[in-house]
Image (cartoon, rainbow, N blue to C red; front, side, top):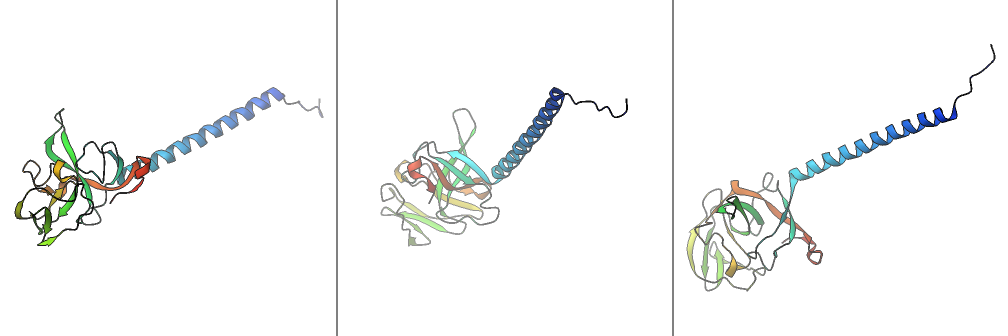
Length: 195
């Protein structure tokens, strides 16, 4: 019997090769899914997708605009006048949940804010506000000073915005911030950075 070699079964060899390929494909697929999930989790720590629901930020943002918020913007930096922010308010949705609002920062701690003759004044200087919907701010408001760790915010649609001018919103605590709007994904004709 010496010198006689067993002939491998081609079907058996083919099955083994197929099993090895399938195992390798499953491992590659599992690796790719794991990498995608890790990337998604990392991104979600920094970015929050949000849909604008109301008209208070027109003409800058419109209902159904799909935007991204930078959730870490104020962990490493300070809130600046002109930032568009989303924050938790004391208002409630119809289902009883806390209502998130999106507004523009007009004054930060220590700033004085007033409204006279259709214009907003911060620290007695008239703001140049090319972004507001109707080009003016209706009503008068005596000067107020923004308390420490608080913000004075307004919508760009001044005639249709519930904001810091109203005691229902008032000054906004920096602790209530969810993030700063920085990018509009949809509609595509508005695709790009939010200012």
